[in-house]
Amino acid sequence: MTVSWRDVARKDFEDAARSRLLWGLVFVFVAFLVMSLLSAEQLFPEPVTVGAAMALSGVAMLAQLFVPGIALVAGYMSVVGERRSGSLRVLLSYPFSRGDVVAGKLAGRLLVTGTALTIGFAVASVLVVALYGVPDVATFAGFVATGVLLGLTFTALAVGGSAAASTQGRARTLTIGSFVGMVFFWKPVIVGIHYAATGSLPGIRAETWYFVLKRLNPLEAYRVLTGAVLDERVDAVPEFPLEDVPATASAETLELSNRIAGEVPFYLADWFSVVVLLAWGLVPVVVGYWRFEDADLG
Image (cartoon, rainbow, N blue to C red; front, side, top):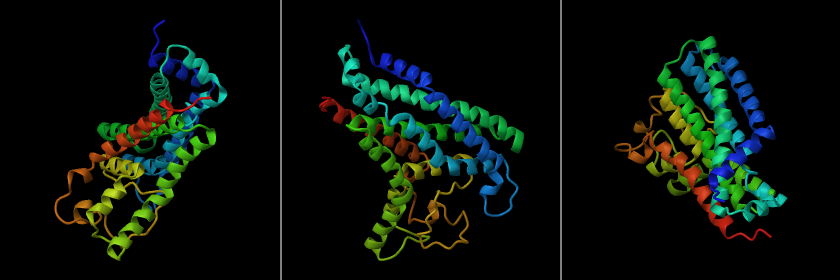
């Protein structure tokens, strides 16, 4: 009998659909988008006329927390759940390699997340038109693409963590712990590094390496990409006002070209954020497979 990772992926997706994981994620994501779009005007500090692009920037501001949450739920139990229940031994009794298991689980969970996000964004497109008018097609497509990329990145991160972990608790720590660190500790840490290295907080002008470290956060990469697509600023949630930047600074002043000396290097260009997100998806899977390949499953 010839089997491959595709068989694992197919079974994993079918199991997710039967267990209602897929439909639960679809329902939660659709509900999130509906509530976000209906309340988009309240997401901005001053009364403004909210158009389609601005409404989507408000949704993106919340999506940077919500989409990774969906992805982590979809992926963090993918391998370790089978391992702890004993079903992994049954699976490996067939002619599957451990690489087939990791690749199949990755493909299956990417399909689960991608399906949930695609259905949610399809519903969102109808709401955007009804509430804010017809958006620019390329702009809306870019918004959807960045949201799906964020979801797939964190799904891969979760599958990698699940493959590397020997217990459910460790899988949660690796995946959810990493996400919490990105949200709450990344910026304070790099601001602290800047202060230790230069004796001052980063201001309007700062060292190039500071922005490199800042943009290595996949959530920051998502904000940069989505902001570029929508031509609207996407704020962090929560926002830590740790930089020595006036609250009245204009969006033009805060453009990267005005904050560093010389030309903006290619690795700080907006498009490079795609590379950052892809790396955050790929590296955890490679490390997780490496740990899983050598693990004692007894």
